[in-house]
Image (cartoon, rainbow, N blue to C red; front, side):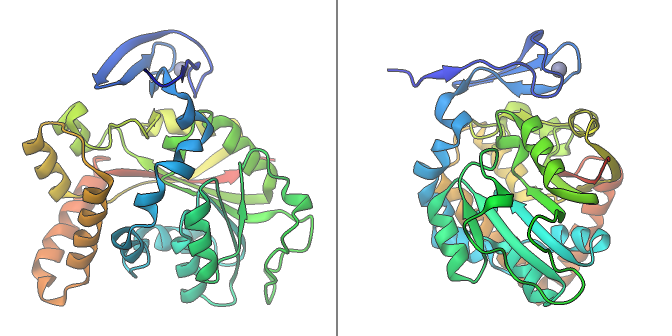
Length: 321
Ligand SMILES: [Zn+2]
């Protein structure tokens, strides 16, 4: 029996005019002839609704390896730096916050500067986030009414405090938008929740990366959980109606993943393996005696970033009035 699937128009321009791009197992990628967007079509119904993440994803998001590396100091280093460069205080909403590690770090590093709130469809990681003191709201972001929330909004100190009914200073989507069947609606909702001039941070895998150029469909991040495959041009086109691009950045580079996928030839990588690798990569980053290696690595990452070839693509966006 095949799982139910659904067809969708182009997530960027909403037209239906595609040619096949890649096929990998049951995953069919198409390219939009009008705007160049690469996306999965059709997609499994449970992936479109987010149901998948509350069921099958549970073991991965709560595996000790994943939690440990999520909460390691170095895990959200780049995201935190980028965020702090543009937003110094105020109420922050992290959409798809999972176990809450980004918000936790934000609060730890700059106590008193931010009021934090996380949201996700997946229940168990949110329980964990709460156990670490990260306030969360549960449910479908598109359905949630943030003005009428039953949970009390976190009370902040100082100037950045958000009074009921006020917008957020920033909304973040760290590695979330590539998972969404209707990404445009999420960005529109984020726009409606931001205060005038508020910021939106979007980080996705970069489809122009060196890894994608070398590996093609063999790359492990070409897989069924990723529904959208953005380049700087298509991500900007997605956000442009509601936001002005303040900054385009390229971050991260994982040579271990490239090596493994090159040898593996595109076989499926289990969630347990993903978790173990994440833990190992995080451990490398924490070792002091690896300083020269880290220096060389950092230089490579910076060069790739300069040419737009790093693994991830991040946009800092300002709300248009
Ligand atoms: Zn299109």
